[in-house]
Image: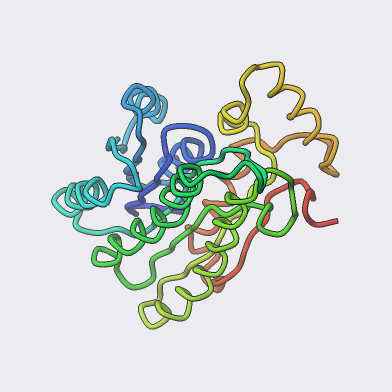
Length: 249
């Protein structure tokens, strides 16, 4: 039985990595998916990879007009949103002595403000019993040097999930966070200036993970599907770490 049959899902950051893997899985399970991303070429590739039951919308979650356009499209085409996977994120390594106002603003605008308004603007279209999933991170719990501002935004999402659980409980809307560990996606490569540096980092992260490897986007997508579906109907306000044990032991 399809776990998301006839559901409408929104996935930000849906053109690559975890978001793309989740979009593919949601469609396989019967959903119609709207993916949002900033780069048109990546969106086109993602749409082709998903193959069916998908609309790609170019936009930046930090731009409220782009979010308005996304939900206006959904309202006119479907009239409802069942699942919101607020997955768009930005990471740039800077230690406390390196943080600039530009870095701070960009990180918060995407990782925190973008998530808040992605969810807020979806609510008028969400019917009773919907699911909201926020992509947090294990760095909200585990101190990693140079992830200062990023980790603060991800910890904030955990707090928001708990608050929204209480605010939206009368509407039957469940809110949970999903916390990836080191996962083999373009976001790791984007933190480094060369492939060699990225490969060194991936090896180091693998060595720090009890399971001895990086996570796969498909593994995170499976967890997102669980939180989106009725299989988690009595689960709300939690954080689900999918990290190979990285932050657990």
